[in-house]
Amino acid sequence: QKEVEQNSGPLSVPEGAIASLNCTYSDRGSQSFFWYRQYSGKSPELIMFIYSNGDKEDGRFTAQLNKASQYVSLLIRDSQPSDSATYLCAVKETSYDKVIFGPGTSLSVIP
Amino acid sequence: EPEVTQTPSHQVTQMGQEVILRCVPISNHLYFYWYRQILGQKVEFLVSFYNNEISEKSEIFDDQFSVERPDGSNFTLKIRSTKLEDSAMYFCASMAELAGGGETQYFGPGTRLLVL
Image 1 (cartoon, rainbow over the protein chains, first blue to last red):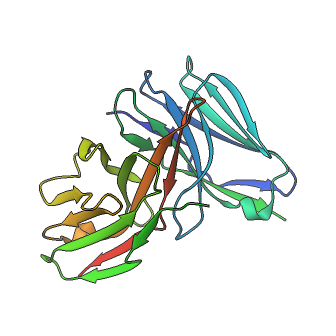
Image 2 (image 1 turned 90 degrees about the vertical axis):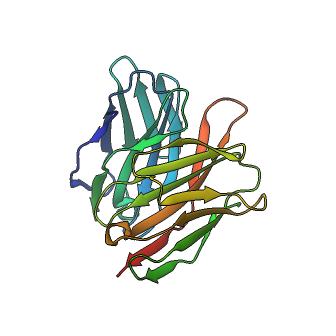
């Protein structure tokens, strides 16, 4: 059974701080990795995708991928109260179209 | 900005009834998905669809479920005989491969299904 694991949180950070969200996955052959933000009662919103080892930056967000360690992370710089949401890590399997989601990490940014 | 749309936003049905959930994916996307999310739980993959056929399905997607792309724009999920445990939010998503590598997958707003 292929799994994606995340700390459920809640993770609380003060406004302006860096929030660090972590994700591990079990399928070593996974190729594509996604970070979604989900507000309560809403659909997942894609904020980052990454498929190469290393860092990928987009505005205040940086995704980091380490395939050897089967680890992907998301850093949110200058966290804002509007960043308070559940962050979902998702992994796409090799050669298949199945996308597996982790349980999500709840982030709370305290003003 | 293109978006995935879903109808209806809410559906209430009696156990044993058939429901059809509808989705209009982003027009130039080639891969389509249905997911569900039971309240308070994680997003679960149901089925993926490519080139007018199912490419992958989960163990949840049993004979009660079917998908169809009837007219080249709509993408539907049918549940033939609903059970109480089918109550969930159902999300449609579509995905495109990017020229420089990688993929983007966008979700619709969801249909909240309640089976009584």
